[in-house]
Length: 163
Image (cartoon, rainbow, N blue to C red; front, side):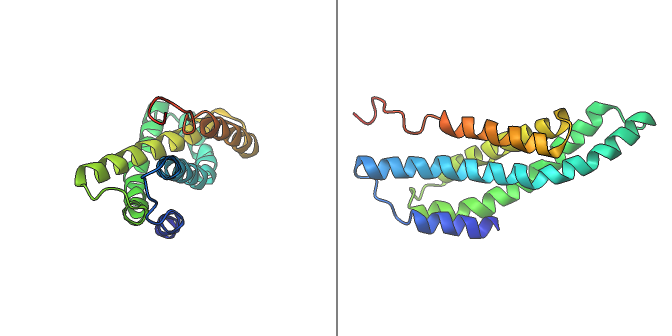
C-alpha cells in the first residue's frame, strides 16, 4: 500500500517545476502532505492492535508479570523497524517522481524527517490509545488533533522567502 501511495503522490506531483512561487509552494506542500499522510496511516493501522493488546496489558499487570514501562518500551521499540521499512518503501518512488534534487544527502535528510514525523504521529496514536477509554473516543480525538497539526503546520504562511 505504501509503495502504491508513493507512486501515486509522485505521479500527482510529477516533475513540478520550482522556478516560480506556485511550483515551490507545490513542492513544499508535497513534503508536508506525504509526511502527514503516512504518519496518519501508521497511527491508524496500529490503533486496533493497541486496543486488543490492552487486555493483555491489564492481565499482565494484575499478575505482576511486567511493569508498565517494559510494556510501553516494547510497544515503542517494535514500531521502529516497521516504520523505517515502510518509510523507505514510500519515499524512494515519491522522492524521485516529484523531481527533488538527485543528492544523496538531501534524499536521506528527507527520508529521515519523514521517518521522524511518521513516528510522531504514530506515538501520538499510541498515547491516545492508552489514555482514552475506548477506540471510538480515541479515534475522534485523534482526528481533531491531526486536523490541528495540519491546519497550523505553517505550510502556507507567507514569509520573507516568498516575497
